Amino acid sequence: MNYDRTANILGALALGIADQIRAASERQASEGGPAPAAVALIGHDPGLSIDRLRRALGLSHPGAVRLVDRLVANGLVLRRPSIEDGRAVALVLTEEGLRQRDAILAERHAGLTAALTCLASEERAQLDSLVAKLLGGFVRDAGHAYAVCRLCDERTCQDCPVEEALQDRAS
Image (tube, rainbow, N blue to C red; front, side, top):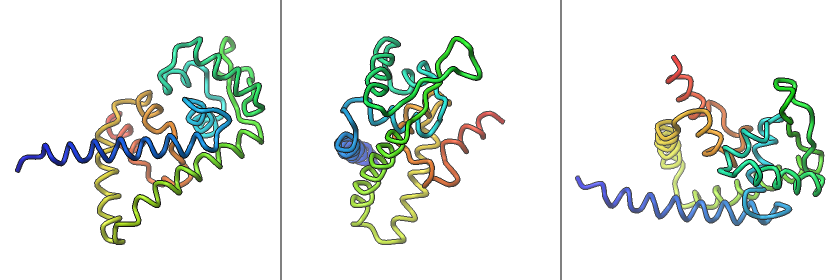
């Protein structure tokens, strides 16, 4: 069987879903671009460093610093001294940042859930298994996982396929 069609339609679906996620997250964020993902990541990993954030978002160091400056100015993020590295800054969300993160992830979830309504329950279960397998095989390392999962809601992802794949590769 020729799987060119499968790859092509998967690409179209991935792009369509990515566009929907971007638009949904930006509706709830204080600004567009990488800001919604930054808020989601900092909420997922309180104490995240600017360096780790910039790598996950694909930004230069000055670009990440400017983004964090704007998030701080908007009352969403606080800079704290890092416990692990005295030269680094740890980023944490404010109460307003936590509210915005929840709104971003709720909007993302609503859009994704709506996209799945055409599937029957059994089909959703099959898709869950297949997507988990694809995602686990796709992620290369922990740094790549931060980039891929930058808008994930870890509260809904028990038995995370990315964490499982990274643990399997480590052992």
